[in-house]
Image (cartoon, rainbow, N blue to C red; front, side):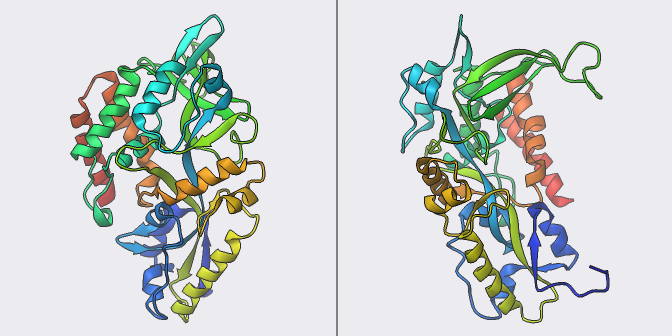
Length: 363
């Protein structure tokens, strides 16, 4: 498209993080503004977290078509071998910790962790939301991570690692990451941080330890979740259930559309049609999602897993598009690492990450 060409009435957006920029540059129009032209449009059939993730400054910027979503996944073979029942609904964080204690050990057959937590932003977000806490106030206002419900959840996350020891806590100068496939999940540990450009003098890119992993909060996607042994489970709850969803494709109304109401209606019709087709857009459909539709998109899933993903979409939560790309680094630098290293208390770290996030929002 030449710079002088008019914008289309509808735009397919493949990077939701760009929504604030597209709005500020006059490329798209807030979706709820467009709906006022021809009357209101019911948005309640969309996954709530997906709608949160496409909202900015109190306005919906796009209709989400598909999203990636985090669920609790578990290795059915490991749970069965250790006599632990598969997670069921309702499944509390306390029950998950107790199961993790039984699933964490080291013997002649190898090491095994109950879960993965030290660098898991999806896990920590789920715990904060399910304890009644929040990341931001209404309409994306003040950061709420230092509020009592969020503090309680962060303390429980810390206790999983340093008190109950059901998840790895890499020493300073080392790191460990989780990886998953259809045949199992594992934690891979390294004895030092990798150097720029590669191994750099100590073989830091060579793993020193591998351990089986029984459970993890992660995105299932098309890999590492299927009929063999890695299955989805309901998210644990405290006051409620919650999980992080992130849209990967959506439709926006062009700012130069001649009839914005008609364009908005067309976007709704198109999103309904696409939700019924076996297309993925790299994620799961978020409009009226059911287990049957999820399985249509991912035929390799068991229907039980597809139903759990569909249910998770209904209790999903989202983050503002401006902050979502940076949340992982902000959490790990200002919250997770200082707490686990003992450099900061939970409250101090929560206050520091709140300041860092607030500064970013003002930029």
